[in-house]
Image (cartoon, rainbow, N blue to C red; front, side, top):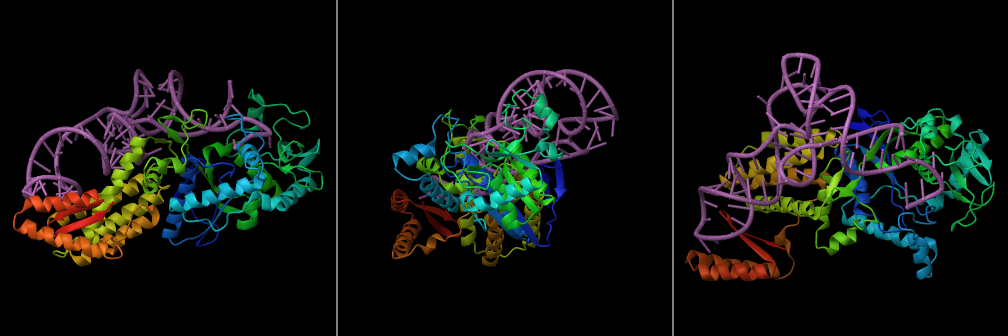
Length: 472
RNA sequence: GGCGACAUCGCCAAGUGGUAAGGCAAGGGUCUGCAAAAUCCUUAUCCCCGGUUCGAAUCCGGGUGUCGCCUCCA
């Protein structure tokens, strides 16, 4: 498949290092609060990629970090530190709060039909590994100690800037480089931070402190996936300095290429502008649920835009997603009921499958893939109207739709008829009465049954092949 | 001030040199006892200005606008 590599700034043929196996690392959540739906967009892109790679027969080993250390001191966006505040209010340890949010993160992942990563390592459980990496860099003379903190000496890593384009000269030229006197150079970044005011502290050979933000990803990526991995994904905001620094630390330590393909996911916008806490327009999974939207629709919406393009979130767009999904569900219902002439669908199915696969294979072109699905449905619908879809055809079609959904994961294949208990039989009974009324043209009674059932959330649709029903 | 990306129908969104996919919405038909669903038809010359080319949404230059980042900070 082709993937756009941020490192080379062009699409490249993706061939994993090891035949048939892919190693992928995703920048995960900071568990001091509810992730926004914007965060979930980036997790969903990782999921889409993983599902596609699996679809193509690859075995994917995926690691997503849980950031439960650092960045907890204050929240410059709003001037309040949620973790600290919550910890104080609820009289809990910061780690307890982190665990609570971590759990809710896992619940949300499940609700969004995201396939869990193989490993979700926590930063706080890899402090020793981080210390080891810092020590290695100190031993190599690439890092230095100053004022109890350890900094990375960027003059020792000339390749710095190869990902973001920010060269050291540019950084110096840029206005906003802060001078922190203990650093040898203003652009050197911290590997280990000495700060007595920080909530979390660990003992290290060079004194108490806490790890620099970039360290955990380097360490956990190398530990679980190896010194060189195939794919690393993250939001566009992480490109610089986070990922740039990861490259510096990792490659300086191992002497090997850290990541072969960097994928950066564009941000989700809200009403055309940025999503930010100060504007009060960030939404969480819980917010979407509270507004009565299905998370299936949220998933559909969030994956429906290409990952290298800003996606604009509006409730109208979410509404449209619900409707597009309803269209798919109607189709599935109709298919299940079809029992007419047999048609040869081989060509149609092959075409759809090919367009779907090829689109996604081109840097995850989801729009093309969705077009393939909708085109296919329209063609089949026409055949259904012409009475040309048999029982056997419908099985072929469902099989294909399931294949599509193994990547999209937005369809519902449960058969309404499988409603357990006597309800199904009761509904069937009413339907049989209704068809008798219809046969004797007693439209009043027939409509009354339909209307009454509708009030209970049971929708009837009369088709040439009989009446089908679904529960809201 | 620096680095990077984007700008296509009312909305969402494909398309990187040959005359604009798909979804939602809208209008008009068909089917149906009526609904619902489905289906058909209609709706764009691609932010602006120059240039390259037989030919550009697609390449180049200049504007304008939007988004991300610029170091410890989420």
